[in-house]
Image 1 (cartoon, helix red, strand yellow):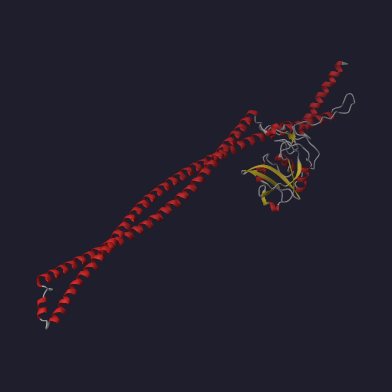
Image 2 (tube, helix red, strand yellow):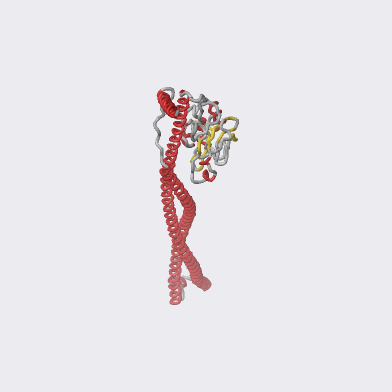
Length: 448
């Protein structure tokens, strides 16, 4: 009995192996070779590099913001100093003009005073000669002939009175000239005082102009130095952002490789289960019992959905078929929801790595499975389509949201101002009104 049972088991094993062998070369396609499988340490190292890069970008962004604020303040200071320099220049030109006019006025007053003094001196000399001649001869010069020629005493008296009047006139002229000389001297002194004040003012504004120019030069130098620092920070920030992008790209690539490997592993498991099922069906059951059915296993959990297709309707139907599936960061592939992955932060706090579901880009991978394969990154998915203005968006288009120029969410527009999305940890796949805060101004069209 035992020997017959042993021979029966041996024949069963041979039959199963033969059926599996035939199935693998006949009805079932050969499983492709496994894709690369990044190690946990590689992914963790890449994630740390991305986190470090993000922190560096954040620090540099803060420093750049402070530098730009300082640069703006210095630019304002330069403008103030520039206006001060302009004012000093205008004041200097006005002072120079005033001093020049005062110098010309003083020169004119000096010449006038000198001329008045010369006239007074000439009149004084003439008067002196007149007086001397009068006392020496009892008359003016050549007056003897004037008296001798008089015809009578009355005529002689008249001539004497005339000489006296002439003498008095000489004194009056001298007094007028002396008065004019005094006035001209006062004018000369006033003009020279005004010239001294104007020259002092010119010296003051010249000094002020020099100070304003120096302050302007210092402000410009400070502004230029700050501009150079801001430029260097901008360059450092751009370099850090490139490193961050490279690190995030590498991390996304490694995670994508890991997902592809897990997808391959799940597919291989399903193929192995199917071959085993076919082998079991082809093998007689010694006890006459119906062959057992094994439930396919793997990280992807299928749920009833619309069939894959290349039409907009099929894409939307597949997405809507997953309403209520949990959000799981890193979850979802072309076959359906999958186990989420760790992010070392928010997603982990919601336990996404223990949930089977979709994230925003994973849901679109599933929805577009009948159209084209999509990368598991919202930025790359958005970049694949033709860009159309939001005013022209139509069902089947992708909508994306960004912060500081980096896309962080993506959803599928289904019409009537509605979209289907896997929004964030702690939520479920749902239909939502389109949110326009932070949305990119263009939709991405993969179909049509």
